[in-house]
Image (cartoon, rainbow, N blue to C red; front, side, top):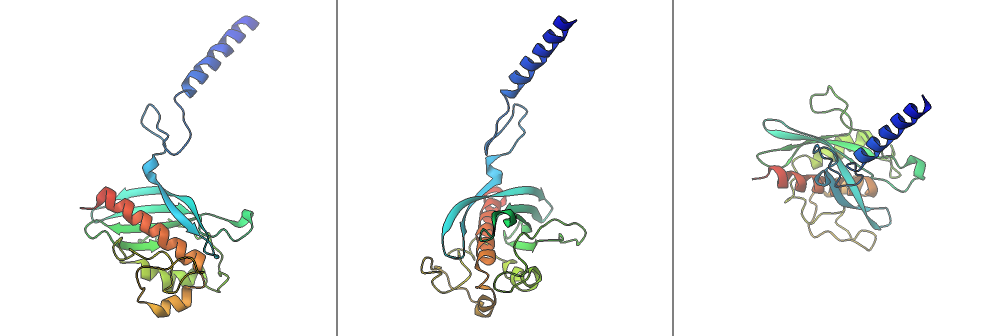
Length: 210
């Protein structure tokens, strides 16, 4: 009986190990059935902290669905790294991008455009060190993102017209100076959102742009 048990266990172990040979881990993982994480769903962006230091990081397209006139996306990324590590939560932006014009149709960190589903998640401080709450971003800053395209954001990597921390100067002037005065101090939140938006717009343009 013991021999039968050992033979059965050995067979199952060998079968499991042979099956694992088709398993992979990483950004380009594709199994024999064609499933797994695709590298094209992982976006690179340069995270910038409050001191102007840039660090290459990854953001992830968690959800993508094509509607008649636009595409729905959920994009997860790490915005703030200035807190203790146990509070560096990832946040998820729910974004809709138009198919005909390739501009941002809708963006949210909570409800989707129908107001029915919780598609996003705010992972930054609320309020930020500059005193801006999640609601402030929702009501004041996110409307600036709506309507933006890869072309309109070209040359913008920080939300200020000044030289940021003596390190980065935009090549394009931001016209909404009053909004800059309100949100430039929330540099981590606004700057990294701009950088992630630029990446998802480029992704959208590559996959759906005419």
